[in-house]
Image (cartoon, rainbow, N blue to C red; front, top):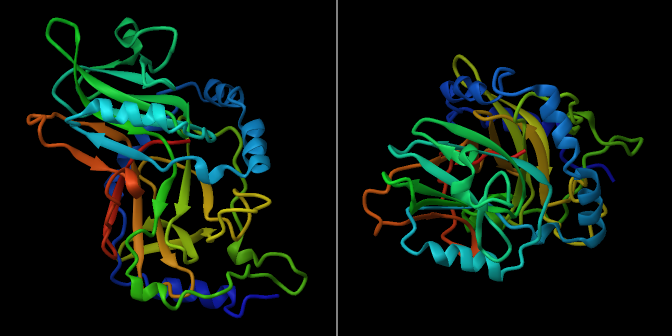
Length: 346
């Protein structure tokens, strides 16, 4: 059955609603290019390594098991007063591992730091080689201003420790779990009242999807550290995701994917119209605007991608947690406000 709201009408409504909404920072887009330039990695080698991470097999397993919703949302904790709580929770949850991804982390602190991977028991290992202890692997140490890109999987956790003047590992400055980006937790309840009962896929008379809502096919031979970002609809109301490019007077939005509300019994969590999860290849600095599918101008959330940043903790008693659900407070993004989402996944 074709959607009563035609593709042309829906996209026109979204375009009309752009006026007054916040656009992405164009400087962040230019700045992001440094993480993906051919001078920072061998592109052929990067793509060849990605091919060894078993994405196709893991994708098929997640589909067959129906466990994509068990892959956690992203969570970052800055200056934790109790770092052991994060590692203990990580060890006790038996977290579902998702698809392979890239995590980009940048040291914005005034100290050298070491990045460690937390194994299933919460033990610290080298972020690049789990056979080594963190301080045994110099390749995981970052001086102020340096950054690194790590191949990993959704559900994996890491932490950054300050390196003390005597060369030993000091306090934890940041803890990060790679996962899906939750969208729509801050939608006002009154806007959800009129959420449509059906989330119909816009199709033509021949039952194929309307091309105005087509997905972009995955690219081959992608640039260094391409991010395969995963978004999750936590609103319970269908959302549209648009790629946003800054223009002279306003920003331009291009439809990229639909976030449905179905979380179970899905043939394909990555491509089905009704799926609450969608995955997109993108880059640091790029931005996505999310809108209610049935009322594009009523609410928006702008997500602009950035590396996870390690910062100084002058007061270790003041912890800042960013997360979702019961694990930490939900990220509150008022309408039109930009979330400089500090992550880097592929």
